[in-house]
Length: 457
Image: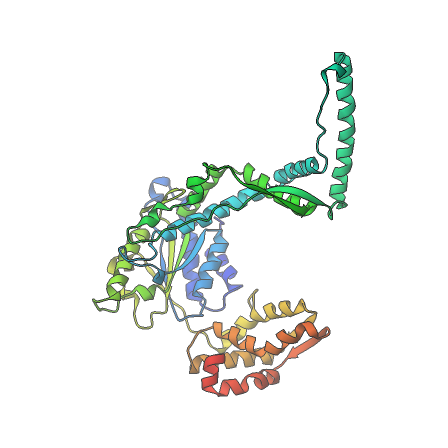
């Protein structure tokens, strides 16, 4: 875990997310507390529980983005999942424990990728030798017994055969490094795709069995291979991947991955307000409260069985989010409320924030569209008044129709640049300037017609 201070975490989040200082501070403190926990004496370390967070705010204000960027900063396994996907035990649907299995799978893939990167140089060297064997197959020593008259003669023959291929092999190696063989095709034997994984969902909880036909039947049948004709660079890449997989110790990978999940895993529970009952006691409300009660042991800390082994959830950080339009956090079951001690309200975004979102972040929408059109040889320029006009229209449409926050900017800009994006491949290289007049000319009619803006913007 990187030793980032809360101030550094907030500064890193500021590069991608506009406004929402309170939410950034809360997640920064939660992340720093994880590092602090690692430094305390071991007997006290297990007693310190993670401070889970509920982010309260309308859609499109940055709740998911804050959690996702936080996970990237910490290099932690991160899983985003909708709470409304789960059902109470006894109903057909996803079991809450499946989120821990999914997170463990993600962590295994993360660690495996890192380990493969670490052995890449060694794998490339082995792959190169295998490629040279394909390009220059070793000669088979077929000698009749009568040809071998004496030991001295045999040694002489071996010496003669050994010196010649070495020089030829080195010549081919040099050609390989110089790229002179890049257009040559070779026949390569590659393993066929494995059998599909079958996951069973049922009210009897068979999902826990984690049935995987590949694991069950993999040892019973030999691995099938097929021949492919590929160019030398692609063949070397395939061979490098094969060798990297062989060099990686999967037992070590699984052990590290489970530790990573238990100590630094982050689960983002979106739409938690959808499983909050509104006080009724019939129908779906019963199931909603049931999901909360199933969720409670996972958040409190329990041990979940996965195909990689037992995973403890005691120190996984849970970040929940919801709009809470018709409900409130206090409608959650009391035990679950106590497991989310930090509540942060995110503010709705207005014109001023939209202007900043369009131009300030590293992944700003304006920069994205400029980069996309640059590939067609078009230099797209947004004037400041155009950015202000786009923000103004997005704010007005959000006010009059459904408020979907910054996501409205995507629909407005797509409509604005519709013609340019369509015609871009057919026009000569040029510079296109978008100003406020262009924005109003393109969007004014749709903006003024409320019914039309509901469907288009």
